[in-house]
Length: 370
Image 1 (cartoon, one colour):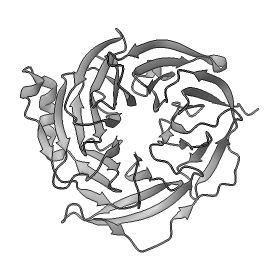
Image 2 (tube, one colour):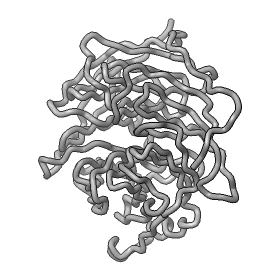
Image 3 (cartoon, helix red, strand yellow):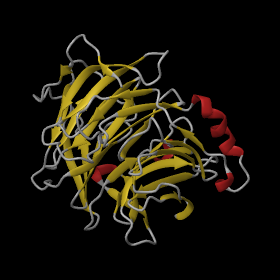
Image 4 (spheres, one colour):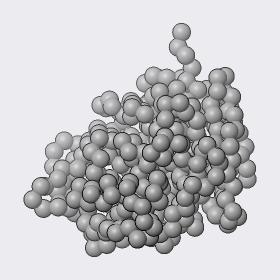
């Protein structure tokens, strides 16, 4: 287990606004009565950078952000199981470039929806309990990874429907896995975190032939030789409570727990002994009233900024790559009082969306500075 390195203290950001950017509310939609748990822009396909998806209850909805704050509904998928409650959604694509929407939730099933035909392309059965997060490999967007309450992470190929790898076992998580993320440039590496208070870094390097094989497999997906990855290459105890969101920032990791802050840290691995090493905590980004679990932050495409909501319906926008951290904006509106489960920042950071416990979607647009 990684221990804290001695050295300089982490740099904590100030909540005093160094006003960088003004945003104003340009739209508020009431999608339905059920809580919305996830909202995500499509960063996979440049034709659809202004398209986003939300999930709540047994519904997946696709929207487009237009000029002047307009949000147009493009399509809506309602799951056949009325008791399904989707918790997560991610954009992916087939090897021919067809956009896919991948959603999962309480049932543990993963639905791959063809956004062109609005039909189910595949359903992935495998997780023994609910799916808490799905993420797409940006360099190979037909690979997705899912984090589950069943204490495992699974790697899937949306093209062939194959479960390639299961990250679980002797060195795996000891409680629900809440979040998972692909490394932006090292295609072999993922990070996962959860209710066992740890963040684990895994490598697929020695299993990569199976990943390649999954693209050319012609037999039944159930006959694929799915492999277990039992041991992470690094385990970090950065937080003392549930860790419900982690994202790579280059080779560093941003993670948050239920203690009102996002933490930026560096895993320092020891090559000789896998799993061992130390953690260097670099920066902390405070987020007041962010002390309930299952609140996730999001970033623009280039990871210049992170936006996170809190349980009072406010949004904090932090500049990530400055030291000390700079609070770019603090967004609040008299009618926005419900907990914000997730935000989505547009490709260039000019639009911030939030999806809320009360079933609303809020759109904030950056105000052009004259």
